[in-house]
Image (tube, rainbow, N blue to C red; front, top):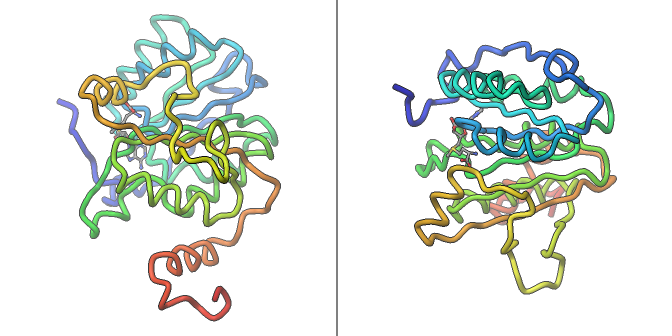
Length: 241
Ligand SMILES: C[S@@+](CC[C@H](N)C(=O)[O-])C[C@H]1O[C@@H](n2cnc3c(N)ncnc32)[C@H](O)[C@@H]1O
């Protein structure tokens, strides 16, 4: 049985894993890379990799049994532009992203991440400031970050951390001054499993596509202070007031 949720902060999931570099994952490691964080059973990426042979696709997932099943599908289809890796994205991705050849990473997607509703569990959410900074450092100007969720209370803090970094501009239909806060269409050609379920239930989906700008990523402490200032304007440090 595959557990519904695992606690990414538990000691077991805090062990860093050495993730293999692109030449060990793909037949042609020079292809532009799409990284999907929290890919679950991986069926979305499996179909996307078949549809987009001009890109490599890497799915990372914290539930090992899902990764094993997804890898078995990939091997059965003999897809060499796709790979799945078991890891805690918050522990093992930062070093891997830092080692990528410059300009290789074309798109990062984080789709329908686990909500962890209780405030005391917010630290379990996947898009923590340190991961966002690692993504920002690995994406060259013009490359993209795509986020979507059916839960406003989950996507809003994600947008807050992305925008507080100063490293991303909204892309797609959402521009400063537009009325629409969310992309009505998914910029990716296929829905994820969760997205299909949510749409079948007639529930809303909140989506944003961002493009990396040329700003250097801030220090982690500075980003955390900016976020704290947004959450709690009364406690704004004098340096940010
Ligand atoms: C709600 S599911 C969504 C799956 C898929 N993206 C979709 O839209 O159908 C979120 C996935 O993220 C995975 N996940 C949560 N925290 C993670 C972490 N720190 N590192 C890697 N994967 C994580 C969960 O195990 C789960 O499979």
